[in-house]
Length: 89
Image 1 (cartoon, rainbow, N blue to C red):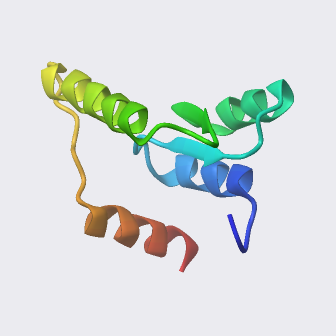
Image 2: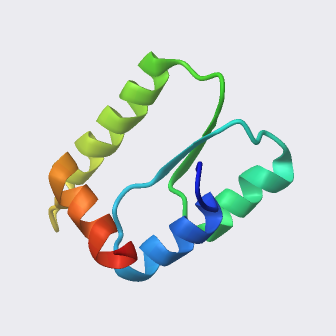
């Protein structure tokens, strides 16, 4: 993140939301990956990454929640941005 700490952002977001969160980062040390998951990430992908793999991961998650009996909520980009804005102002 250009103007902040991704781990802190993730921790704050997790207090307010259960939105699926993927870290896309150049930090590829084991300690960085562990810290990302500990902060609440659902997945952690290091750069450089394959766009096709990212798309497949997101599609797999969407398939999983659409098959969930409780029914997950799929948010639009605008809804996600609004939630972030509500949390961080």
